[in-house]
Image 1: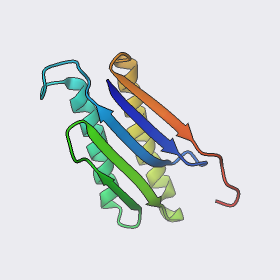
Image 2: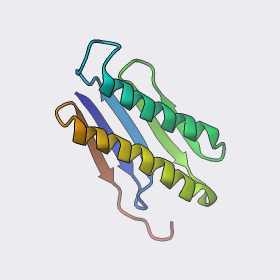
Image 3: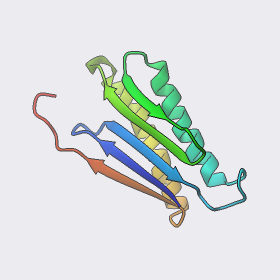
Image 4: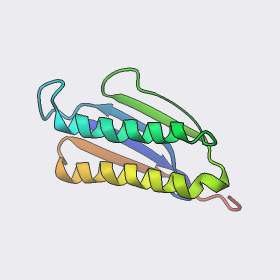
Length: 116
């Protein structure tokens, strides 16, 4: 089972992503669900890396593990970041619809703060 936890801020922007586990749909190294989650996660990470004004940290030390925490998003980058995050999250949710026994997408939403 692949377990994902996506933490959103009060504006609906991704603040933290944790992905753990394996899809268990095929042999090690040939699991289509693991491949899809790996591509989505890696691409999201590379998109963040390409935007030098967005502060973040993350790691993917082992197969089946991925973690990103967003530290800062300039106001000028919020729309771009929102689109990137929506694409990532919708991709994970589509995979959960196709493979409900093999992936779980958990979303936590923080309360909105006034003035942000």
